[in-house]
Image (cartoon, rainbow, N blue to C red; front, side, top):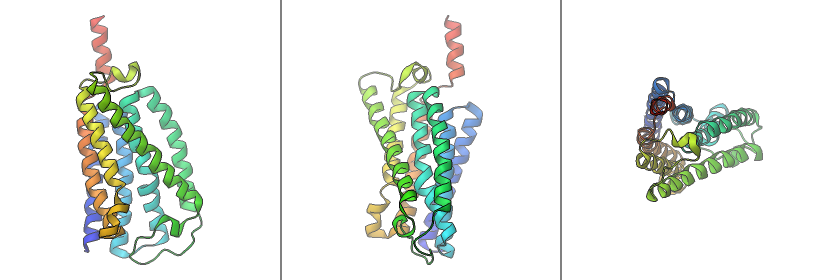
Amino acid sequence: MTTNAALAAAATLVALAFALSTLDRYLRRGRMHELAWTISLSFFALGGLALWWAESHGWGTANFRVFFLAGAVLNVPWLGLGTVYLLAGRVWGDRVRLWLIALSGLAAGVVLSAPTKMAVSGTDLPTGSEVFGVAPRVFAAVGSGVPALVIIGGALWSAWRVARGKVPAFGAGAKRSVSLPKRLAVGNVLIAVGTLVLSASGTVAGRLGKDRAFALTLLVGICILFAGFLVASSGTKRRLIVAESDQRAA
């Protein structure tokens, strides 16, 4: 196994393990941000698996479509949805989720059916501009850019609110579910740092090559993200428990 394939394999297994962990936490606690993270991590794992396969057996058009869809279009938006649930609460999170489900389906249809400019083959990772026309690349740009701004902006806003001694949450629904605001702020900062690491593959590629840069940033970024998830989750409570406490106080 080559170094690139080993890194891709490690990133895939780490993302899958974290997805199973967040799924277990969601099933036990019912927190919607953990469900959003589970979906996002599953896409990260699928993108890593496609890269792992390509590094071991070579690229093909079908493999690249899966890699592009999971690793460049759908993963970060669902990660951003977790931030919305954490900071804005269930009502806004559910609204964004409905739109995201529709857009995810549309993006999947476009990427999986879009005509290609060239036949994908060999062991070198091609770029989206080399393979696809405008539509899939627009979905990739919007899918990575807008949610990243939400994640990073939410982290900065969260830290600012904590620095002022206020709860880092929008609206009463979100405030009622926050128990340790400092941990929630630190968790969001770690998630933002992980997002920045994941987006640094283009910069790292200049020194390591595209394949290795993507595999390495995926592995490191996922580890930082999961640390952020653990910290942020420890700063929230289940809405049911808070509601019961409010009823007893009343």
